[in-house]
Length: 224
Ligand code: 3PG
Image (tube, rainbow, N blue to C red; front, top):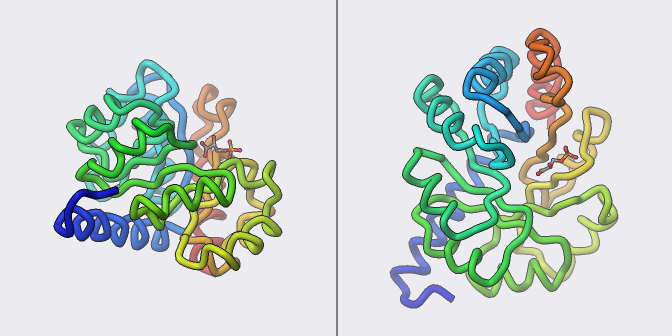
């Protein structure tokens, strides 16, 4: 729980920022890169296709350097650090200039660090109890992950009843074909996924394909 009114007001302000950022994004590519150069090339293609809000996941040794380089080269992009699993990473990505933080789930220590971070945070949850635990700490913007495996749209509708304040980023198994239907749900701020940036295209340097897929995703987002 935030300790004071000042802390809870600051957290709510960061939640509003997260809400606005995700709603404006609509579709957020979840990007894994093995080098800084790969990160820069991929983001160039995403931006060319019209996507400017990106979750860069900390699943590779190059991720932190790539995050800093992308923020430097594309100052207009909103770059979130994803797959943040440990409290130390919360501080690290803040220092590197991340715009927001996304996690696949939370542990008690990670949630403490997220609540205290100065960045907008989007913690992960998979069940009503997990969403409720976030709400109890003042979090009302969360990542529902892995949404397709958990039940997809029927799950989103089911949690909307008892948890009307929670606004969600729906990730995990979302693709070009299903993105629009997820975005039509009132409790969905945005969808995230790797379908615009599959490892094969990135490894092959197939930037035209990334750009074309990003363009389609941007159209889905703007038609919501
Ligand atoms: C995430 O962390 O959001 C997922 O890795 C994205 O899921 P996807 O690869 O099924 O799109």
